[in-house]
Image 1: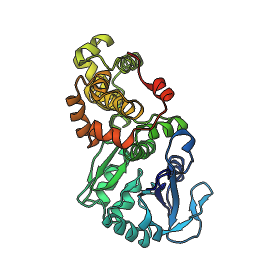
Image 2: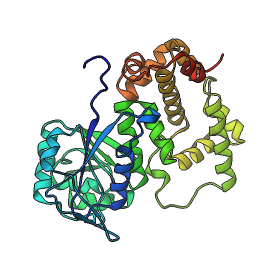
Image 3: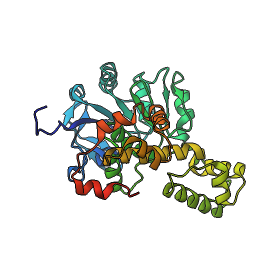
Length: 338
């Protein structure tokens, strides 16, 4: 790339056909179709792709006008398939074939919610793990028995294919794809614009209909404990210590915490520390041991192990890939003070 030239925008393809959900189309458009370069978000080239140029009818009297045909998928860096109003809606044969060819080219493909049914129709989920809305897991298993349906994940990845749970989990997946490709700061800027969390930890288990096992008082107490942990990430935290702060036994605390968040206290804490480390690596020039100390990992070795497990990269490589060039005033603004 010539000096001074901006990188080419990432090319995102939104695959549309009759029956796709207007909400998911809106989510994809909001994440990748809005120019936020003035806020440090890289440019995206989002295209609405369909089998032909005719407007695609959506529920509620809406329609979507494609601006590219399926041939454009050969140029896409990422293909996103919306969910469906009727989850058994058959996708047009040309769409299914185009998705198969894209996967054969190793183009990443993401499906939101019931979009997993479209990928399953194409055979792309055969003998692979996938997730969909918790209320649709039995339906997906019944109609596509070769799919290994994971019942409680918010989103997951298998062989360059991403699937997500219902509605809001589609937002989670889109932001995750931005974060893994363009960095935590870009994802956070988009999330702030959308007034949503840049990422959620946990599983669908927190949303499945079942009697709530904790009182409102307990939920408020757990929220206070999480807020305390977030503002004291550099300190060592244990389940007994956090439980004592909540006025609960460790066993009761762990049970209520998982019911509320869908994950364990330790996994939640690790996710928060990774996110904080990502931000420091992107936005400061702090040495790696200091980043590890300030985010509670204790040592660079421990931080590196968690980055390898959760992000499939090292802190050093992450910084090289995503660190922004800041002037000194910006660095002083965002660098934590001793």
